[in-house]
Length: 402
Image (cartoon, rainbow, N blue to C red; front, side, top):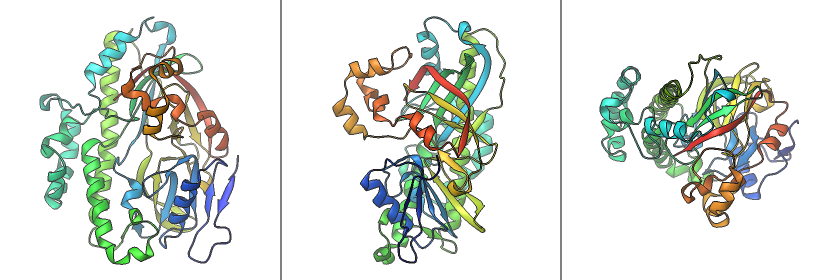
């Protein structure tokens, strides 16, 4: 489907259009998108993906091209959050009838929630490539030391860990019953600290210009600002940390599979894509900073991952390079109700019913991740048919939540 809705068609000068790839958008989300479109730094237009939903300041499921400026709150605090997936030579018939032992083995190997590795278990080679950047960050920004408990160790011991919330590890089957490993995680505690630190700095820097901001969460750094270069350095490091974090987790999960299952090889290169990040790109004749907040890059022939909820299908996709979307697409199903609303509305029996046949937690601790709290992933895919094409359709048989 093409763009379904355009906002600000008759807006005054200085307000850019908002192009939306769904006809189902809440009023509060529309207002948030309009606020973003009023910023003088936005180039051409704002693109809202089919999974668009309310965020803090900036809308989740939006793509924001900005000229010589970046909005830290739009990038958010889970900097570099994204997906990693790989296909194996295993097939469904090679999996055990009862997958609980496999799930338990992965949970024992990969810390989840607030868990972390012991220092001695941290991934040595990966830590080495990140350590110089971490040292610079702590030296330049001692405030980060106050935001983390044992900060010099936390980022090391959390490397190769899952986190909580909507982060997950899944064992999936595709349309040919081939076994895939797919996981979703970000930059953990260090990314959160970096995000919070620079969001507060941006608000402080723009305190005298608040009357020009529709929402103070949209405070931004402009090139030339004393904090701009520092933020670029910090956000790039956090994005790399998130990528390596997923890479290290994947190694651990594949190690569990090798211990539990018949010998196998990997039959595809790993797909590793951010969906909360900022990058420099060229669009509509300008060199801009593109912030994808809950969106992935979908350049022509680029592979990406679009997960559903813990009870729905997921998709491996190939980008079509749609210029209007800034070569982007949705990052997943997107929430249709808040976590608190989900906890009030649903019971454990609902979760058990909606995750029938999947080896996963089915307790009240993950009730806010119940599939019904998310949008219909198939509708999301229909609405972005001109952004991506489906390469593989995956269904999970094991799902591990933090």
